[in-house]
Amino acid sequence: MYDLGFVCVDTSNMQVYDYENSCTGYHYNSKDELLAKAEARRQEDIICYKEYIQRYPANAEYWAMRLQEAEKRTFIVFESYDKYVAAHNKFFCDEPMTEITEDVWNEMFQVLPVFIWCTIDGVEMFCNQEMFSMSITNQFAKYNGKFYTKKVDITDKETWIHKRIHMK
View 1: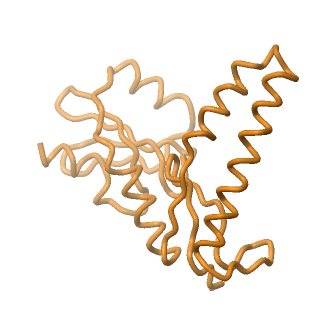
View 2 (view 1 turned 30 degrees about the horizontal axis):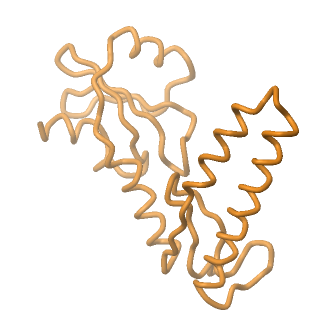
C-alpha cells in the first residue's frame, strides 16, 4: 500500500485536506508545512467567498454560509492514515442513536434499496446504501415497537444499533 504519511484533516467534518505524501505528487517536509498550506487555502476560501457575496447577490446567503464555515474551519494532523480512520469513525459513530417514528422507518426502507438487512439479538436493522463517508452510513432499527437511527461503520458491528439497544 502507498505510504501516505501524516494526514491533515478538517476537524469540522473529518474530511482529508491532504497527506504528507500528497496524491498530487507533492511531499510535505513537516506537519507544520502541511498545516500552513491548509491554513493558506482556508484564507483563500474566505477571500473568495467574500468576493462571491458581492459578485452574486442572488446567491449571497449561500456564499455567506460557506464563508461562515471557512472562518470556523480548523485542521489537525494525524500521524498515520490508520489513526485518522480510527478518529474519523469515532467522530461519526459515537453520535447517539435517535428514536424515530414508524413512518420515518418505512420511508427510509422504501427510499433506496436496503443494504445489510438483518436481525441480530431481536433487533431488525438495515443500512442506507449510500455511504456518508468512507464506510459510514445511516442504520435504521426496529425493536420492541420502537424505531431508531444512527450513523454506523458497516465494517464494524460494534458500532451497530443492536449493541446500543442492549446497552440501555
